[in-house]
Length: 267
Length: 81
Image (cartoon, rainbow over all chains, first blue to last red; front, side, top):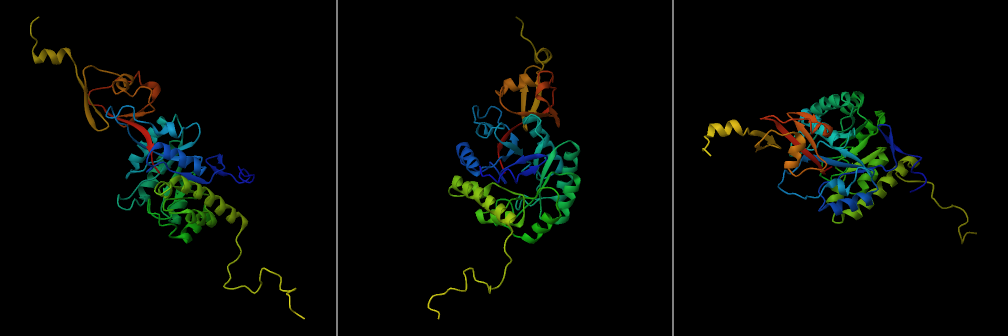
C-alpha cells in the first residue's frame, strides 16, 4: 500500500475506501478468473447481481460468494436487468436480506434491452423509495447534470453517470457533461459503464471523478487479470494527476525545459 | 382395505400448489419456508426469499407457513456489473 492512499480516501456513505476502482463480477469464464481479476484490481467494492436460484436443476453449483466473500469485500448488489422502479426496489430488498442487512446498493433501472440506457424517470422513483427505506443508494444514471443533481438531492450517496453505453467500451463520450456533474456534486461522482481500456479510466480520474466502476473492460479483455492490474494503475495514476494539477495547455512553448545558457561552441 | 375414491384422496391428502421462481410446484402437505428450503436442497445455502412480493426474513423461515397459491422468489448473488 502506498503511503498517500489513506490520506486521500474515497468516502461513500460514511465509509472510507483506499481503492478508487470498483469492479463487477460478470462475464468471467469461471469463479477462479473472477477471483483473480478482482484481486489484481485492488478493488474493495465489488458488484454482484441478484438472480433466481436454480431449484434442484443443478445441485452443488458453486456460489459466487465463496470466491468473493462478503467478509473480505464490500459487496454492491445491483439491479441490472430491471426496467421498472418496482422491480429494482424488490431486487434490492432481497439483496439486503441475502447480505444480512447490508444497505449499500447500486441502483440501475434500464430503459431498453438494446442500449441498456438508464430510464431516469424510473430511476428517480426507485431512488426515492430506497432512500426512504434506509438504503445507501449509489445510482447509475445518464450524464445529464440536472438528473444527477436531483438524484443527489433525493439522498443518493454517490451518482454514477455513464461514460458511454454499458458494455460498449467506447470510453468517455462527453467529458464536458461529466465535468459539470463533478463541479456541482457534493457526493462522490463515479463513472460507471463505457470504460474500454486503461486510458479511459485515467481520463475519468483526471477529470476529477472520485472513482470508476467497470466490468466488461476487464472481463472481456484477452487477459482479464492483466487488464485488472492495468486498470488499478490507471485509476491511481489518473487520481494522482488530478490532485497534482496539470500544466496549462499551450499550442507551443517559448520556455524550453533545458537551460538556454551554457551551450558549447559559443564564443 | 377398501379402495378410496378420488374425492377421499383430496380430502385426506391436501396438496398445496406454489409458484417458485416462476415454475409451478406441488407439495403433498402444508409446509413452512424452512421445510421448503430443505425440499429444494437449499439448506445452508446463502439465499433470500420473497413471498407474494414481501421479504421473508431468514429468522422467520420456520414460522412462515406457506399457503396454496403462494408466489415465491428465491434468489442468490451471481456475477454482475
